[in-house]
Length: 291
Image (cartoon, rainbow, N blue to C red; front, side, top):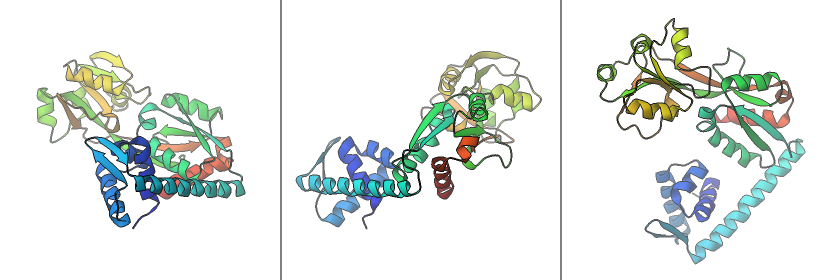
């Protein structure tokens, strides 16, 4: 059965001429998108797209289908704008403060879905460190901020969490022994260390200090998590990195869980102006509904 996601996918494929990019745009996996297109074409009884090696084209009948799909999606957006107008949300703007690792992982899908539901509301993302986000919230310079490890009851909505992991060179003897059972912070404290901060006050050094430990041999300090992993791969030391910040390329690296596990938690916190903003409350409502 054809649904709204199918029509969005058709338009996205026609625009991108690429199934992978269209799948990412619509929040689907590539295999899921390919299967959905095949099902839709079977339901229609004719091909919408032509496939020649890696090139995606549109058939003559497909052009007509996609034109109708665009009209339908445009009409749906117009209806949603009318609904927002009736609640005084049209032209709303939300300033959302976040830090890099969350901006690139958790936020894109959420903001994409929100824009579809409320096309008349703009979300402006401001990126900074976790300390800067807190300062912007306190100064009421933003309506909403992503806060790391918020105190109980402070977050207006929970975004998620990820685990801290140790990253070591694959040939590291310590990594070989810890791969199955995990590794403690104490076992890492005396290792040559690549300190990656991610632009945040919560990092490998602060985790050690919270546990009553000290890093005895910091070789390099970098902001970027991926840079730290590359230095580890070259044998310059070990690093503590959030699991969500790991790249797909882990050649010559061994990722080891911490024992006991340590997590970063992310919550969305409203500033005073955010609490009175209808647009901001609509975004929070959408996130809670999707949780």
